[in-house]
Length: 276
Length: 172
Image (cartoon, rainbow over all chains, first blue to last red; front, side, top):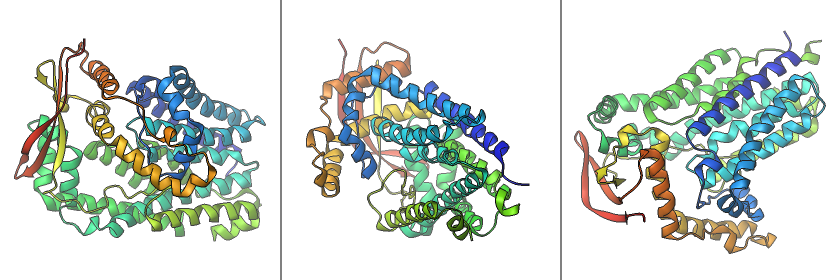
């Protein structure tokens, strides 16, 4: 079977559903700009962010509620318009895809600098719209695979970092990470079931290190994706487990990265012209 | 090979993808500055030890110590991280400005004024109290924040040293 326009529509729907769920999470947790109502920003060693600061948008966001409302509105409106245009096959879809991608980059830079959210979690929202910026089924095939390879590079590099920085060679790494991650919780409620479970893992270094090791292997195993698409369904399962366990154990929300899994789901479909 | 197929399909797209990959490799090998959407995914990679000191902000709200176990992740982050970020923002923004000026200073658009915050301790406290009121769903009469260091000892976190009082605040 070939990757065709129907798959493109399903992928844009998947992207939008993931995005809408995430937007709802931001909304209900008070993380959107107009809800968070920021009063200061924190800069980072990021070229893009510092170029964005040239515009002085940070001052507008910190002092003007209307700007915050407008930015939050556009953050959901653009992906919705992109979804509609791709689904209805409108000519505006290509332009909307590029605009959505650039806007999400801009929004992520601003929101992550004035709030407590990390910018890395926005990567999918920035890059995935670019899949829909190309005309023709063949171009879409290559764009989708570029996203798939990008995700593999990111995930494998996370595993390689653990080797390069040395965390993987440290037996008490996961115990120490758990202490750091849950310090406030452990001080307040050490006797709850979650506190007891975390304390158990901290005290049993071999078990917690095994979890860290398995997570690193889970990241490195994605390297198979460079050579074959045969195991992509397994990679989806591995990644989903990784995200669920991270949420449960570390209380980190990596669900936004699930949007990339659409590229793995359709990866074995052939390129239209190549097979014709 | 995928890049070969892509090259036959579109040379420009292939060059763009290769450029992106090279930038990713360069920024990751160089280990320092990033350029969104290219980041370094090295979280939790550097060795950490059980003997490391952990700082926790202890918040006394209307005479009761806040129980972080009863808050969700976002609320806990607001209570803990916003204090940490505010404490560091002056120093971090100044240091980032100095570093980035070496790369972007040539544009003439890097006015120092844009890259630092103009916020007083009082402004921050007012904002922080509003956030606490949202979380606790109770009007604030008194807040005291102390920064306390802890060390993991056998089965629990034990206080290490004296706490530092950061905020004592009774809103009007």
